[in-house]
Image (cartoon, rainbow, N blue to C red; front, side):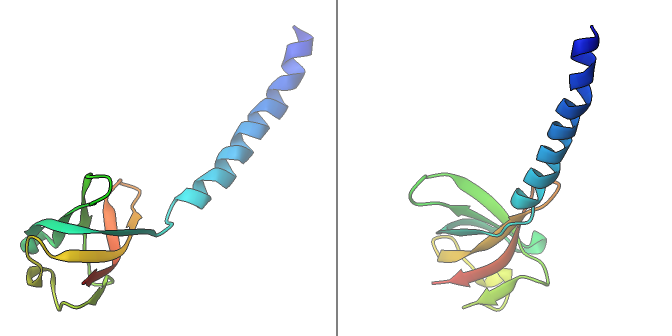
Amino acid sequence: MRTLSRFKVPFWAFVCLTLAFAVPVFAGDAVEFSGEVKKVIAEKNKVAISDPQTKKQFTVTLDEKTKLSGLAKTGDLKKGDKVTGKYVVTSAGAYMASELSRK
């Protein structure tokens, strides 16, 4: 039993260090996207976008920090508009747009 107990500390140290260095790499990294607007919820500053290659749909939320190009506000977008941009996944799992451009 003593042989196993001496490996407990190095094992848990390894696990903690791995998690400590892995999380910052993924958290907060901007992800580029492009797609077609499927739905606009202007009062909530949300835009549903469909990726033409994967056919997956996702929703980005805009705030006062979002850099807009080709539009003044969320309500200027309409279904079918082609858009590009970047989003960051928040700790709550929401997609927060840092940039959004209408093509």
